[in-house]
Image (cartoon, rainbow, N blue to C red; front, side, top):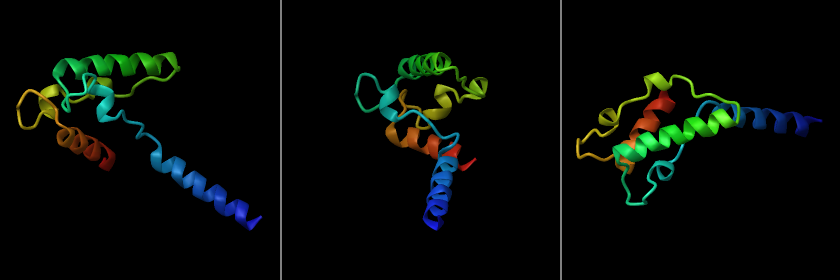
Length: 95
């Protein structure tokens, strides 16, 4: 009985820790696998994700508040690098 309670608590903690952070990976957007995300790839990926979640009966929250491409491309080279992408996702998790 004690083991069951501990397992239940641990599983609940894991589920709560991941709640709301089901973010797509870098490779989800980097469709041509060149190690960077173009503005077109970002926009296409956002549309694809919105459609996938809608088909599952889920909706993206705060899509109107999504950062623009230029906000993610912090070095202004016209692409989002893995570092820029990870930096943004880490900042979102910290909120």
